[in-house]
Length: 291
Ligand SMILES: [Fe+2]
Image 1 (tube, protein in one colour):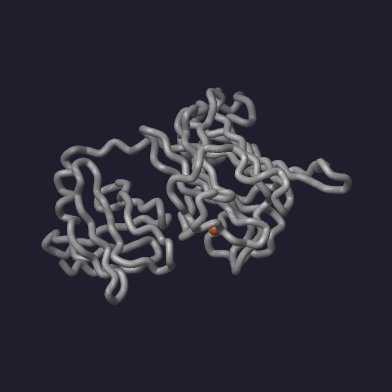
Image 2: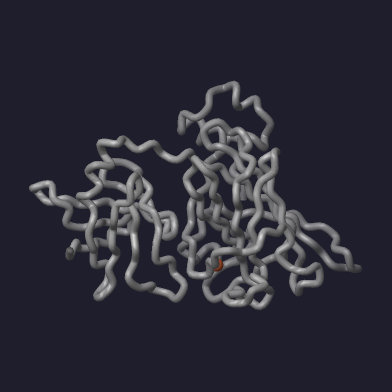
């Protein structure tokens, strides 16, 4: 469900991103530039999906769904062209295509000059405890990668799934389908991207403090290494098959970093001598530095 105009106004003012003139802008601009809520990547992501805007054939089983949206800069509300979207979802039986070369119901596309994207698919179905959802991974030079999911209103699992955020629930409009008595859906999901944070070179120098291996579970470690201006993580084993094993730690503030793939912020914990001894995530899980 989209936030109401009043709610958007309140949030924008709170963020200090806008003053009165912006509120006179068209509604789409105001709605679209609220930064998108992040969400986990999940184990079903596959790299190298083909570039296309039709994720399946027109006769794909399920309810036809067209998805559109506008991608904007969260600070300026200007539309962003050339944003790379990578989207993936289940079929009408609740299965992801994890291994075929057709990359069924997966695709990559870029936003046009107007910042818009559009793709044709089917309405996803729930599977296991998860409600209907479509995964999105957005990247563009100079911006933080955005990993998120859109959910569908009316799914009872939205109330129980721990990953659902109400800001990510959309209500597609219903239309008559091509066949008699059939229906098709049109969904809209706008996303704002935040500029990549500039890192103070002095703080990068201190990142060597963080390097090492941390035990996240018995026999499972996350290794943290500096690579120039970036801090990288590598997980020794996945909790679920397909879970991401590598990524970048995005700096947030001193000793605090964001891991987009798992939608978690990690803080490095220091002892009384200033030495890093643990990581602490926002769920309160500690991982001890063992090397
Ligand atoms: Fe999923």
